[in-house]
Length: 467
Image: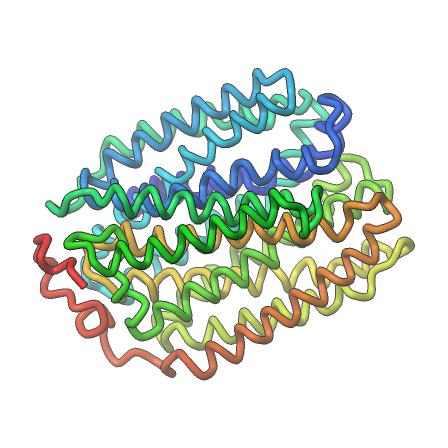
């Protein structure tokens, strides 16, 4: 079990590392590649956008062809994308290479959770502890990303932050060979559903990103939102009538499933959006060097890892509701403290929110992930985890775009934009707290997969996957 947790945790850590490691390189990238703010946003969002829109497809591939096989392909694609990033000579090339990285990331996350879920069988407490360790690896890498990025940038330049992924991908491939393959489903691929899901998510995220640069009333932006809406409606129509849907709509009628997805969206939107704004605040307003900006995020590392482990313990003993509530409360309080920051704020005034915000998120993520996995049958675990992570990553891309638009007018807009973003984050997490309080049962009496998802001793077959 230790080997499985380490191997799957490595994949998640690599994926999450590249979410934040780029943030501290934004200023250097802007100078080296002569890119304005909207170009820098696309360097960040091309990764999260490709990651988000392809997660559902990746989850289906993992369920259909085996999670181990998909996981190995994910490491290979991620390594190729990282190489292309390191060799990019323009913003356009870098954005395209980041999209390839996003494809690789999408093939790493759902399969890693499916492999972990397979190893835990139906043991709820073991699953809770394993997922806590898995998320601790990801949270730790998110927190350490700015630090590692700062060291690499100062020592070797911006290309090194991408090339550093290559030995990690090689290690991941080597470790994955020893894992056992998961159960496979015989249900066919739902190509219309796959295409509509990709189109809907791409249009939504792309329009939101461009709104910051073009304005919310720009014809291209409005057209993007209209296309996203039409694609989403068509997706629901197709999935409701499909014999073998890629995403059974019945999932959203399961107790706790929808609440966990919405909570994940709130956590990612606020966290990714604020980290983007804070990175620019530290470097442009507080005049921190790249190394100083990276070191400023060090407190995020300890609290995120510890809180993930605490969340696993709380979840195994008291159910998912308690860590979700505590996490929302801590995060909201931390964002509230950021509202006080101004152009002359000292680093000491940032330490407490830098401790509370990742700590709150890390309490929430293992609990909501375990809730999602325990809600469905084992042969749907790849798809179910993909739903959660697709929603989270789409929300993260939207958070960067929306919060980034608040500071798009230049350095004078960073502090006011930061305060508005922090206030919005408080409102979102407070709303999420109320949703969890009202919508999540106090504690599970037994493994929810036995009653919520309809699992019956791990049997497989396409008929059981029909809504």
